[in-house]
Image 1 (cartoon, rainbow, N blue to C red):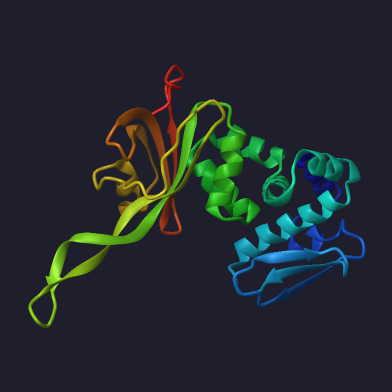
Image 2: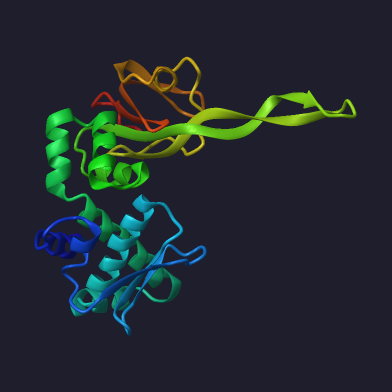
Length: 262
């Protein structure tokens, strides 16, 4: 699937919306409200539908995903292999996963990722740069970057989220009521091949951690630190924290010998 997508994108004149469609002869693109659905490919009517109500970066990834559906349906050998190996819901799940792989290969080709790693290393800044240059969400960029990182690195996207605060404020009758506060947590995380753990989504980041400092000051930080696992374990790592758009793109470079599961 990755090879199909890579071959497709190499023949395109560019990666803007119009250019992404250039390789699909006779297929049209329509934007319209689709409720909870992000998009769809209708092979009978040769049209890709994209939800007009979602953010542009999501529309862009969805478009690449639906193009991958078209590429997959046009490859009889791969489609036949999939139907021989899977059936029912499992087949649908595998196809969706493969189309996400294809979308990542279209929007974030190996050449782009290799260039960024060469310039900035496997760092939080590289994650931010990939998200910006490919015009995709930080989460999409995170998974693509982790998959193509050779060093033992954990990546994470951290941002403020609402959580129940321990302190309770009195209501009009004097009874206590729960208050809501924003806390810095892990939104998404993934690790390079060979690293068997990552940070769970929702893991809180301590106020004293350099990630929190980077968010508060809006200045990038690179220093010796630790991976703040939810269990309380603090694994030593070299941290690179790059604040971007009210979030922090993070990389934890692990000692090469420490690859055991947390």
